[in-house]
Image 1 (tube, rainbow, N blue to C red):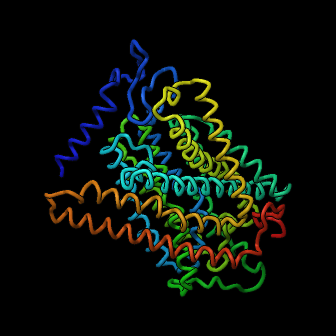
Image 2 (image 1 turned 45 degrees about the horizontal axis):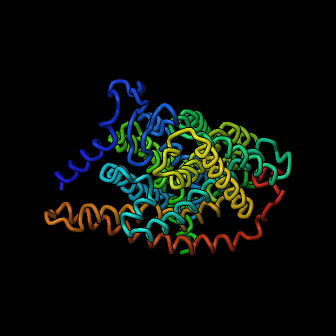
Image 3 (image 1 turned 180 degrees about the vertical axis):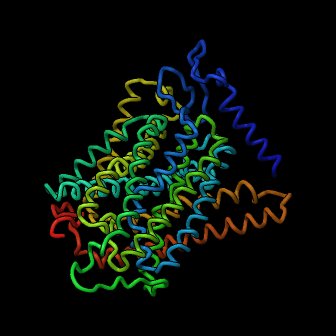
Length: 473
């Protein structure tokens, strides 16, 4: 099997890198202007965007930003639902699955250089039906995340301005901002902005975990007299509450569909795994840090999103610092959704990697369409925690974990006559991952729907009401 992988890697090099002009200086053109030939994007030259320009450090920043931004703001609420110790265990369990799935993304890209995303994995697994089926799930997942990001940015604007205007206005402003950012065509250039996004969100999270322990009491607790944070080491949630909490963790970490896009635009896809492991370590550390610290000091008075636990003043400061990070979460996921539509529309034509009129019109139609749908979602489901849980439940495992488990089995187990105990062990893990993904999809969706029903009176579609909890606090 190792020899087969070596052949697959050689195939990748043959199709993708052998046409590069100069390994020492890939920016130098050739006589015909071709820099590199890519199995997905075709001939990449100076006449169009560089879809193979993402550096290793740029990939790390994008991956880290993709996992730290939205879901992490609801992680303390998960700890409140399941308890301190189960909260840590759930994060570690889900992260183990997601890290493996993200690792398989890189392996799949090397074995199948024509794969751009999870939709192509569907084609490898089940032909046209598999491709179309996963295309719908992938687009819904990406656009729903973009919708939750619009909601998060509007919440930040409400908090900073103390609800200076109708929330529906802030949602619209957030959508326009997202459209402008996501319209940057290459992930190489998106990664430059992601530096600001990653630094801002990490700085805001660190400020939050420093400020909350220094407070006399959480903002949501009674401001006079005794108060009980009711800290639970092990809580006793209902099945629906537990599954909803797990779904929120899934939403925070299930980025495999976006990681495919990152791998496809990297200068050196062979460095993907190293970049991914670094970003996973950073993301896991911050998920546990934020969850443990905020829940330990706030207990039952945890606010959702988490910056509300720091009180009105520091909430405004945290959101002010975090806005670039929240905006870049919107940019990344909306960009990946639009890029899929763009690649699918122009794949196999010169227009995909050349700045023609058709190229530009198609790109802006794709970005505009994603923006409009994400805006409608964010306005129709105005409750941040509920939206995060619902997205993670319905699509997180379904598009991030299950396809990767099946792809591993297809490439490494089915038809392999030289199976070793390691192969059987890997197959057992892949089957477990697929079954766990199915269970979390079904059970988590149930839990999220129950939570949505219970919180149905807390927000109205296209509402002007403050969604940051700043007014009257």
